[in-house]
Structures are given as structure tokens and as C-alpha cells.
Length: 193
Image (cartoon, rainbow, N blue to C red):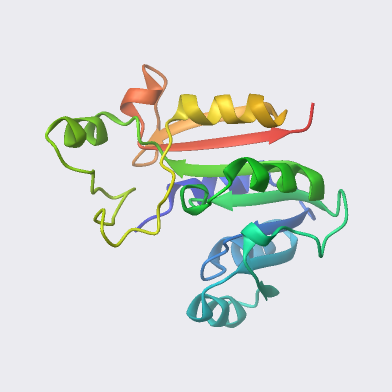
């Protein structure tokens, strides 16, 4: 699956930034930021196969559970903390965002938008959605908390995050008209107030 969020994330990362990538998967994003932006930092990943893939991509990766906190890192250790298409798998998304804001100056979160019209239509038809952005069936999904763009805006207000930029996209195109309805992926950049 093409990751349309990676290009936008890269455009927000300045040269030489210190980056922490939470749920880094195979490390492709952090490896790309190192190659194109001279970024340095770490990935956090729990899955054994993804940890090995990250190492193969030259990423400094720590095998750990994000939900247990980021106690290994001090306040303001990183310029950016990224949580890309992992938010929906978190049990306590508010706590994770709070930790992101503690260890990083800015946070970037991307997530599948459950408010996307095709997802809504699937629910009206009596089924949980399965799509490019939500590729699992209800019985084998790692997703435990699905949210809409509006829900994430509310979460930012709850944890005291100031949204710096907000994009909603579908298949690489930014959606401006009715984004919560027409966009399948939310991408947010935020910081402490």
C-alpha cells in the first residue's frame, strides 16, 4: 500500500531534525527522513519482524510497547515525534499524545478517518468497513479505537495540543470540501500551547 502520508510528513521535517517514530513498522519513514532530510533519531516498534526490517533499513530501533510510556526519553529530547497510522491501535490515545508532547517539541499523527463516506456507508449497510486505509476485517484487526477527523481535533483540545496544520487526504489528494466526509486519511501536526 502506498503511504501518501509519508510525503507530507517529510515536507514538515526540517534538515537535521531529531525524530522519534512511534510504531515505526519496517523503518522506511525514518530511513527516508535520514536520507532526504539528514534527520536522526529512533524508531519504537513492538513487532519482531518489523524490528528486524527497521535494522535492515539502517534505523536505530528500540523494541518496546509505546503504551508503556516513553520514560527512556527526557522532556524535549526530539524535535518531532511521529505516530503514523498507529493511533487506532492504542488503548489510551490521550496518554500517548501526552507523552509525544512531553518528549518532542512537535507531534505528527496520521490515522484512517472513520468518518470517510465509504466507511459510513459500510456501517449503514450493517458491516464494519474494510478499505485501503482500514484493510482488516473486524475479527482480525489490530485497530481498537477508530476515530474521525473531528474526534481527533477534540482529543487535541482535551490533551492541550495546539494544532499547527491539519490535512485530510484521499489517495494522495488534499480534500478541502467536506474533508471529514470525503477524506480517508487525517494528518495532523501539533505542539504544546
